[in-house]
Amino acid sequence: MTTEQTAPPGRSCGPLARVWSGLTVLGTCVPAWVMGLFARVGIAGVFWRSGQTKVSGWEITGSTYFLFQDEYKVPVLPPHLAAQIATAAEHIFPVLLILGLFTRLSALGLLGMTVVIQVFVYPNSWPDHAVWASALLLILLKVTGAEVRAVAASRLTFGCANSRFVIRCGHGQAAVRH
Image (cartoon, rainbow, N blue to C red; front, side, top):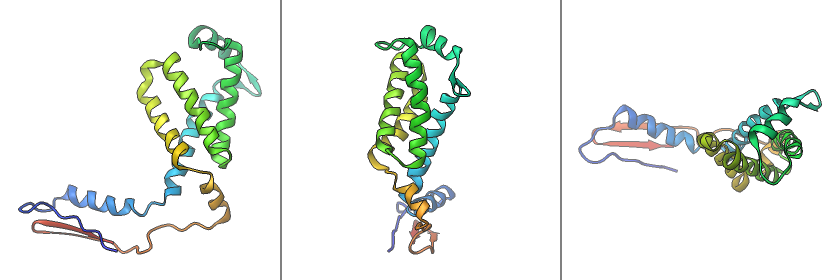
């Protein structure tokens, strides 16, 4: 299979174009399971660490209850119950994501938490929440637990079917072949 990218006539292939072409070719070699695994592990780490700040051993700390009562003020739920639900969710859903169990349900739960945090708790932190939502939507719509099961079964291969890459830039054109 050959993929060719050419520069406009009269323009030479600069170093940035060569780098971009190389990254484009390498991007086709990254298996989808790798991207899914990175999304799941990354977002699981965010919520797990947050959950760990709410507990001491197996107990929810008094400061957690205080935050839910005086700072977070989540509507509808009593602060005590909201603290317990959030703490449990921040510990259970990340573990399920890492294990590849109930992946979409876990992503949906964490996406719901992200929306609540964005709307009611920290509306000015939208850049962080946008990143979280992006990873969670990727997981929800594209990723399953198959990545973890595939790793466990040792059936994974890395690289492209044809791992030979040629990046050639001449006068007026750039070609990437793989």
